[in-house]
Image (cartoon, rainbow, N blue to C red; front, top):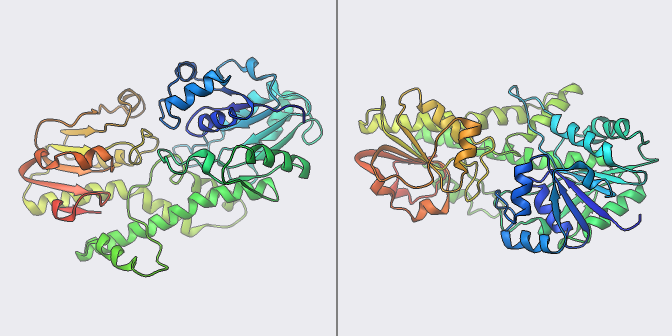
Length: 421
């Protein structure tokens, strides 16, 4: 291939860090339909906080740019698609964003070009769903006029240790030669190199089981928490003891939200059923993890009743709304499930999160939150997300003389809390 010019389609948590990284070696343009997002990025700020402003501004000075005009990526020859793959209200895979991005690529792709997908999908989506769209819109023939690959994203939002350049990437291509090309492009910007999979379907499958495995493992921890809580045993004490064995895998119970672990297993569950296989462990794990928000709320109510704190019309503070600590990402946050369950008993619920975008939460969830800790006392305080700011705060000042402090994350000293998950 002649000189590589890269276009990254989708500038969210995955696309932007990747585009910025590619721009250190190749002429790179980022494309996103969200004009406000593009304007903010071109001004040198990433609201997701995945790319530090200094790095983004340096990339912009060195030629990287973002656009919402599709025509501006027509001269590229290496297209990377990194758009969301959500599920609908029935937890069925929703390929609408992915097929829309494929149509956009089809409008600008030229003979000899390559398109690589990064979005998480079940095996077969790239070749059976996406590439036919590119071929139909472009009028080009797959594997004759244009080529393809799949390199699953491994971005962990908020993780400043496993950043995109340090992640070992899986790559694949539609022909052996294209697989080599794609692998070399990715390998040229990665510190820890690549793993070249033998096919696109293998690469797709490898990604979806990464998150499904974590979902199953966390579900086991959540089930243990339910068992030990019923027995009056502290789950974290049990885990501390078990972890003294060299081959024990240490995980903790908790809320499973976000756009990966809580979504991706549904893609494989749906596809497996097409082949007549019912993935019982994955299905049960999903159901268990999806129910943990309501479980936490009911545990708080139980604690309040035991201490004689009136639940009806109680004044409750929830600390944290994002799906994980020290990260502004609120996608599919299970804290919302805690709020909805408690709302059946009281309307006096305050949510505080120093990381979340207040306007975005209001827009997507219809919920008004605040970024600063309130200066009043509550009947119950729930530490839902382990933001570093909460560890430094005087949480006792937020509690009435008779009240409940519940720690979802096992984040606070045990002697300080009434109960923890």
